[in-house]
Length: 312
Ligand code: C5P
View 1: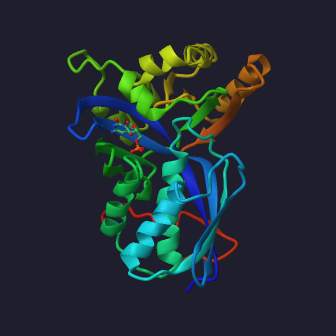
View 2 (view 1 turned 30 degrees about the horizontal axis):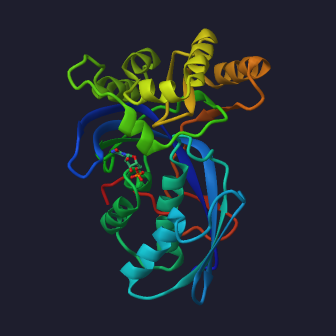
């Protein structure tokens, strides 16, 4: 059994999110494009003879059985048919309930990390099946690609190869939005004309920022803005600082702007910080760099343990 593992759990942005229908199970049918960014939580995993002990740097977060990391560990124990133990420490940096997928990423990373720590050798498809039980967007966090197209509940994943690293300014106002409430309150017009996700996908393949900006979309924005009007203020501020586009991530309230490059992003973040309320978290982020390591890095190193490109 591995001695210990330190694994990064990246946040996501939704470059595109369209609701294409309501499902009988109460979920919505989505078409979304995730981008993984270099804002990460970190999980440190150590083997124990038995029991799962979870600790977290953020005292407001529950470390009980309701935590998705704990649920991931329980699913893996069951799948393994044994009861291996672990101590898991979560260093929380991704804002909670902000639309950045932090909880889902932690869960996916726990599946990958514990699969490696316990040397279970569960294959990608098995992990995807377990991830889907934890949340709609958990499976897509298992893929080692900078961008992933999600359909179905957001859980049918297709990685996009050969894509550029983007520079963004991320702004998170001091507010929390419930994903289920934003979905429930949103009015979706399935007939209204909206850009197609293929514009974003094409733009990513070709590195065209102008085309990317023209195709970005989020159907949840109107409802999120209705509940949290400061989202609109942030978007206007980002655009007035020269961002090519600004969108809500997921169900919000995190908002991001697409910048021309990292220098532009730093400039926008600096200027915005001078005017913005102190309660807004403002930072520059980039597309996560790809790390392909097979999931066997040991203590002291940060890795995206065992994420696959979905072909293996
Ligand atoms: O699956 P997860 O717990 O992340 O989803 C949170 C909530 O978001 C769901 O309970 C549901 O209300 C809403 N949701 C949805 N359709 C999706 C994904 C999430 O309605 N495709």
